[in-house]
Image (cartoon, rainbow, N blue to C red; front, side, top):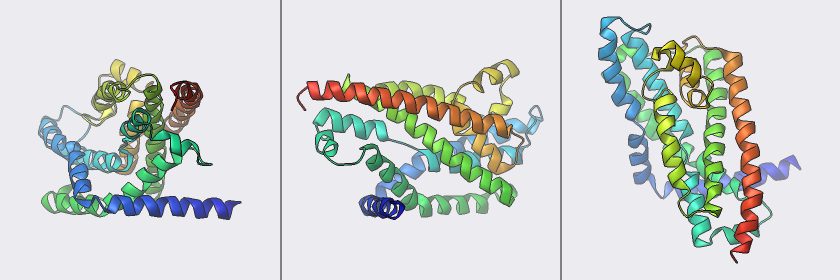
Length: 263
């Protein structure tokens, strides 16, 4: 049983890996498009010169490098793919397959991570050559915790966006909901600024949302900044389960509507 599942997973990954390799030039643009943290890093390094923050300029540099890495590992686009499948009727043949269509999207995302890895590493090398003061080597414990947090962050980001994609059964612009949600993700996740620099009342509210656990939490783990491990991982698991339950409900309701549309 396990061997058969493993073999199917390898086939899925190999197929989507070959598909992603065809778009290497486009992947370079995607990697560069997620380099906003590197740009913002310069702003915060200058702001930290006055000493009004708990983080030093080097801390800000390392934090935003970590954010860049997290973004490369957690970027998702499933809402646009799924919306297109529903609107154009391409979901119908996948429903005939003995596997949940979600696995096609998961395999696509995982394969894309493998393909973009060399470009990401190249940008990191260039950055550390230009700014060697920020170079650091995380200890093994921090790396292992970061990998676990990054996997959970991707799972949370994916299941959230996939839940919004289910709205494509009711509207042709489900991606509009994701675009609106992304504004909160942009400002509250730690991608624009570390949650550490937020005013205390604002930080307390932000930590009750799923956003900081998708960027700020794993980034802090990689850099070695203090975090609440128990709260962080439990919050990620809780939000994943919440959105997973919502996703399965919308999937069942949406399939009834999709069939009713004659697809």
